[in-house]
Length: 175
Image (cartoon, rainbow, N blue to C red; front, side, top):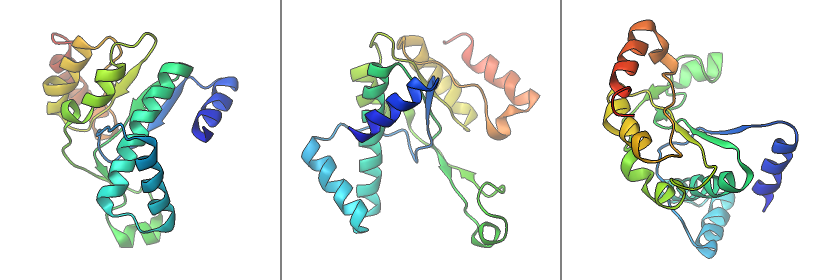
């Protein structure tokens, strides 16, 4: 309920989108008791890495459910190991060039979310990637089928002219 209230506050103040920097695009629909159990473990600092990732996957799913209700466009930026160099982090702080991409599986990870909301009226979902092969292999086919999926333009180091041309070539025919 707290997250829905905050989303409503942002909608009332002109927000049109919610951006989700998740570890992976994995989505899971947990029952309320299991989600509460994982939340409590996380708050106590006793959750395992896998439990934290499952909780994140559930929250991603829940954010999609709320987006169907409140109309905020949902964007997702997964697949980045953040702040990988301790010395650079200590000296310069976050976002100083030591975020490293890793491969993710959009089609499998998003299946629960898209099964439930991919054809929902008014839902708009934009997955982004730093993996050029994913544009044509996963995201374009998802956008070609699901009316709610839109293709996120190249970002990060993919915003160079040659990369954008490859992006356009990769997605235009399929999506």
